[in-house]
Image (cartoon, rainbow, N blue to C red):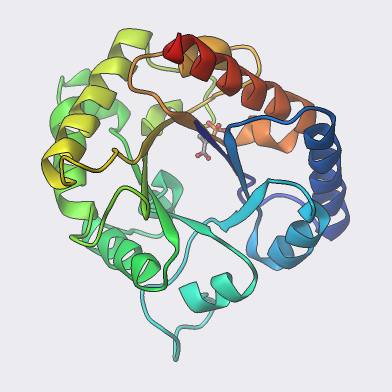
Length: 254
Ligand code: PEP
């Protein structure tokens, strides 16, 4: 299981560092076997990484540019993020797709750049409310997989996050059958793309995951972790989700 915290555009330095320290403390009280990555806003990545030093919690970024450097005002390159200690980079988050008009082609270029620098891309896909209501959700996922995943993907360098746009920050989640169906589409696609001898990448669910619903969501067939936005700002709630991931692994393995 992999649990990823997306802090989005929240927290000044003090607040971010305190939250990271709290997480480190929680992680020192009980060792979990699931992988945990925290993606703070770019201005505090370095300090959050320092605050998490000595724990198994890694640090990632919320976005990157697809170019190595140069005239891209306001952007940040994969090399710069690697220099800050990031191992993972989220690409194609629906907020980037909507607010910054990023299409599948751009997402694919970003993921490719992440891979070329030896980092792990967390590639987000998910249908809109309109696509869901018109019965096109699974077709949309298939299109996004075909068009956003570069040919450089493998079992290690890629994580796919299924995040229905309408579930993000809304308090709404799909029902378990809908999540299972989406994950089947994603895993079938990955099975056709990744050599049969290799394990499949993590496939996360994201969209209003919190300490109250995570237990059930993480036990859904095919779900191998969660991308958590709002609830990741509360270390206690976030840690509860990580503990449910542990329970889910034990149940799935039993
Ligand atoms: C996200 O930002 O990826 C996300 C899933 O947000 P939330 O958990 O707040 O819905």
